[in-house]
Length: 124
Image (cartoon, rainbow, N blue to C red; front, side, top):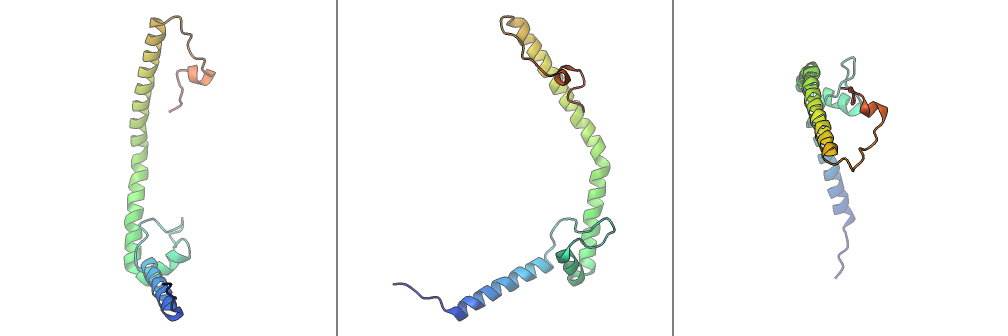
């Protein structure tokens, strides 16, 4: 037996869903930095959230901005650690390949580009 959809109930359900989405969008933080370079809300939704949420939105943005500043300050040190690890892995890989080709002279080494053959490849 096929059931017909009541248009009034359907409209009410859609309206309630849209209201729920609007409330969620306005009152729940996006969890991302929503300000531009001049510390103005970036985009229409961020502007509305800043108006509706007021000080709590700005405090959340300040916290996110502090985290981003800390991340950017720590990035060079973290990148240096990664570079050291990658260089060690590359050196180990080159050593393994050299050992392999020395043990198996019948297998010709793979040809690499001049950049790959240099000591600085990859540039880190």
